[in-house]
Image (cartoon, rainbow, N blue to C red; front, side, top):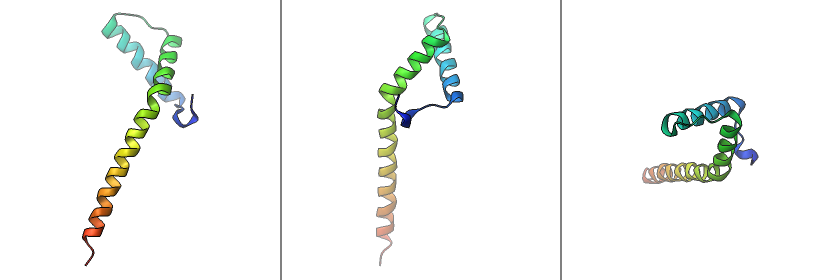
Length: 75
């Protein structure tokens, strides 16, 4: 997994719990810790960069608006 998207032990534990709960409630399936961890790692690896880039683009848009606000203050 890319180090940029490495989850902490606590984040992994919460992710595993969330995946197990989802499968239990939505699919009536018992997913073990290993299967849940593998699914979490797959999702993080495949979709983490996409969501990261969405956050970066949101931050760029926000900053561009603030810079435009500064330019509008010029006399």
